[in-house]
Each structure stands twice: as structure tokens, then as C-alpha cells.
Image 1 (spheres, rainbow, N blue to C red):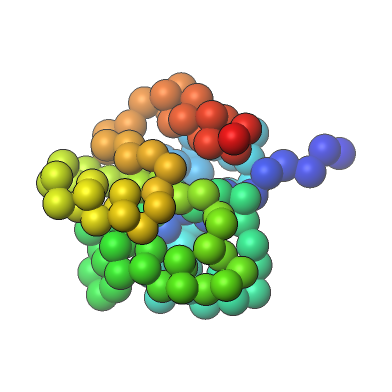
Image 2 (image 1 turned 120 degrees about the vertical axis):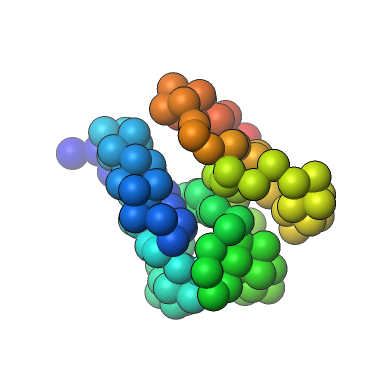
Length: 123
């Protein structure tokens, strides 16, 4: 069996997480987590190949979570794609400053998301 690339999907909306997992599970090993805090805990133990991160989450939002990820020595280089319904220019700017690879708006097209992930992972 071929080892699939591992993607961490972080979103506090269970429907969004299920949609992401459904769209990607054939080609990737997807770990869905419903909070930024859980994502940070997971990243202390595991190193996924890519992170899909929502911005608008209760508790620790995606920007705050991304800041913490970038401060973790073992996670600095993990590519992050923001996958969010937030169309705010300041959120895009702030995410960009923290080194995201792409910014995808929800609702997303599964084929488009696949292509963007493939592009990032082939860099």
C-alpha cells in the first residue's frame, strides 16, 4: 500500500470538516480536528504534510492558531492553506504575513481544492 500524504483539517464546523474529509479521503490521509487548541496539541506529536485551516473558529481563531504553528520549530515549514468563508482583506493580509501558501473560499469546489493542494505539495 502506498503511503498517502497527510493533511490536517482544522475547522470548528463539523459539516465543513466532513465535507473536506469526504472530498480528500480517497487521495490523502485526512485528520479532522474541530479547534485550534486541538490542532496545536496534535502538532506537538505529529507532522502532517499540509494543514487546511479555517479562520473563523470559536475560542482560538485560525490566525491565532497559525501564529502558534509558525512559532513551533517543527512546524514552521508545513504548508498551510486557509480554507474559510471569511472574505476580509485584512484576514488575507494577516494570513499572508504568516506564510500561507493559498487562500480558498468556502464553499469550495472539490476539484479546485485538490488542484491547489497538489500545487502546494509539489513545490
